[in-house]
Length: 231
Image (spheres, one colour):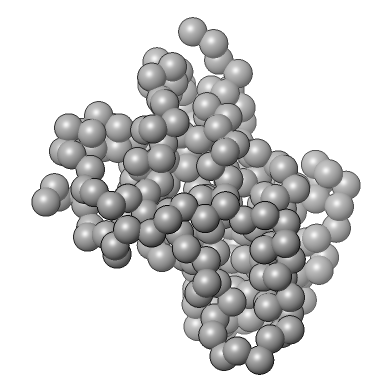
């Protein structure tokens, strides 16, 4: 086993959510169910049924995962130099690996190459919150794609996780994403969540209730720069 890889949780078939499924989850989150199970238990995340090779990790994970979030020219140049070699297969293998390093790298790769077919995998990973650290990148990528389904995933996440005060996950990142998309799309989803956010942030370390999009917009600018680059 390579030193980056965590054991998988078994082979799971890829599930693409259609509009009916999303609406069903919205109802479940809202309380329209008598089943006492978390609302995302029925979602099946995409998971590889194999371990990534060390060669793959050395080439498509290690040089990237620590630098996601940087905004310097060296990072942009690195991304533009490899962009043409990032295939859907590479993205899928990263997203299917049960490790935050690979999953956030795969999500980021999907954004800079504009591979919107991975939105459902990324959105499901966000809702399931199976690994730490990757959620911030998921939110950034969904904000970058800015399709209606991306907005749905962010709203679903906030509908549930803002009501879980003991789960201090990626609520701020999702709030930043929905606020940014409100500005872009002239919508008002952020207002729907602000009261729950204010309550959620109470008595938490670093619990600044103000949500800004400054850092998010810097990250999205990097994504857009690389996305538009043609070698």
